[in-house]
Length: 561
Image: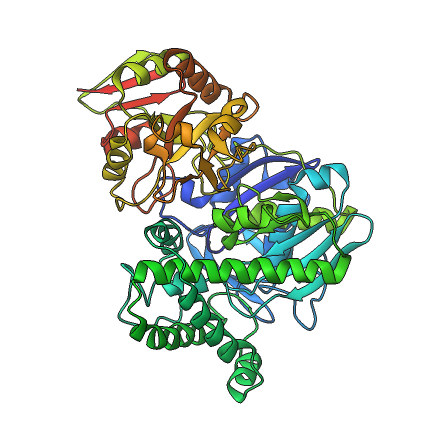
């Protein structure tokens, strides 16, 4: 169980993921919702035929804190606090595969013992155990950079366990979003000590395409970084003594990050560089710092490789950093799970306990293991229904050129809509990106993602490798720029999602029939949700939202008007 931020409940049975339900994907809950009340646990178990008494091991993810963490929630309406393991290793919890805290908790009147592992244990285990490396019994480096911690590197070997290589540099993952407090359209008048708008990081990743990294800005950032975080001075000594990377609410480093950007802004002001170029330079600076430190540490520990690498934590949602790591010759293969942020922490906590008991092993899982659609008893006035197969839906997309909300089967794991809770549309008209941003009430520079039949991806995108979870950057090849303009980002790239029958048979059928009709094996994809909420949990939510006039769900087409 992940009880805190990005709360979720997951069940592993015989090393197979049965389900993982994130709280934001229930009842149109807000993004990042925690588990509000433990009464949801028996409800979710019952959906899959389990009872509380069927659970052999209760495992709870750790949270903010240097020594222990705390989860504040309710038990059938009564406020409770549950002590959990801390955010990362400490003086007493040195091994990520050792329990960080043991206790008891109640659901209703029933009391259960639980084991809690540090928060980073869940990240490490979720990434490695979901990888092909684990399935093949291969070792891998695991890089964790989460919002409230510094980037940390581990060597994970099924034969020998986990080797901790320590931090790479002392900047928490929230540093990226904090830059937007000082430059650009998300500038704030205060210097918050917590980041209360996690969506800024994703918006910033799109916004930087409006600018270009500048050599003089990179030089200033490098100089200020050294003075604030690495030089042998009393200021840096104080920083090192004060911080620890213990989690976003207990970690005091954010005020130092603000000071870093404030100092950089003062030195950059005389240069007259645009905010777009400054933010693009900040992105490049952090990317270069991460890649340089990771590869140097890998060489120091193991040599030239090539090695496997898992990247996990909130920063692993940055597709450009993922692609930069994958481009390094020292890495044979790079794996980022579709749930790299805390949405995967319930899965990771269960995997950590599995590893502690029986060693590091792979689990069987599928990206569409989220909650099923909730039945909608009533269709709102103004909508008609008709049977519609996936192939027939492809014909409607081709003939009308209109977007369609697709709600099909179980929801995706993690924050990316992969065709189960999506809005899909033809990509052939450049105006479609503006239309999708309009209905989503998003900034005009925000991109929409392409979904593409796997076998055609290398022809259309560079590198065009299979990327079913939309977590890497691809360049649109020149011959296709004018053919699929709606998925083209400002810098010529796209956040590609490849689709095969194994990924989603209904979506694959839609794409294949659309290709037969149009000659284009690509469609647009963006998430289907209320602004600031998780995916639509039912058809009724999409119909009541009503900003797209076609909704397709499990063989039925709903048409407005």
